[in-house]
Image (cartoon, rainbow, N blue to C red; front, side):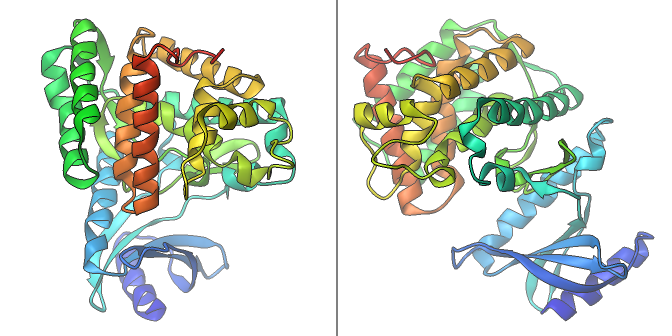
Length: 363
């Protein structure tokens, strides 16, 4: 299959005046049977030249179509300061019976490699630098792809929030508390009536593993399958710190129930417990609602980006809950979906009982 993809890629590259590739290596295989395989195609100099993503089954094909569409929208906008960091979509065709997305390769090492290096996440200055680097690139993306504004209120709720929960109801589930939550979100959006927020390009999975670094700066941002040419800016703002907090216990395994360098993590677990089969919830609760230097950095990150977007603080609790519903839809994996649903319910119940200051330190 690699040979067939290589030959097809060379035909496409020749038509675009791009260098030829001679070989390929598998750099990613999603664990789901309906997922995809990612091939890195190497040039005659042995350096990365192109990337090909292959659908393993027909169920995966819409994912490749969505990424192709998102990258096309970005390249049509051509954001001036970040174009070099964007994979350029070249072709979307069937090769040997499988749909294949071909794009250029972008250089760099995933930020997640630094994240998982021994001791990295224990050091406030290193974590602060990660947040700053990721936040700076996101700010440029959102500034350079702004295509207008949305005025919050009932109409915005129907257009930008209700569709997420329609899909959530169909794919995740629905109960009385979710109906009450949706009514609450509708009321919150109405209370924010008149607030204007920008429409920007959205990555949809702005996490350390999709951010590439070279000499301390972002050199590439990959995996745009959840991307959109225009959407509200909040999901990417929440996604990076949420993802960063989710895996702290893997980057720095707990010892005797405590996470080295993060005493607030154990406090969060003691207060809220955990979700069986899904450990991410503790890290997310710690990041956004816990106590300690890491949650303080996260809240500073959020405050800075809300100020940049000229969004009042009251938008944070509204769109954080929408973000959690979006995350429950991001991966068709039962434990993942059940985890985000449980987290959404916990936060809804805590907030309605007055036990949780939304995006404020938990006392």
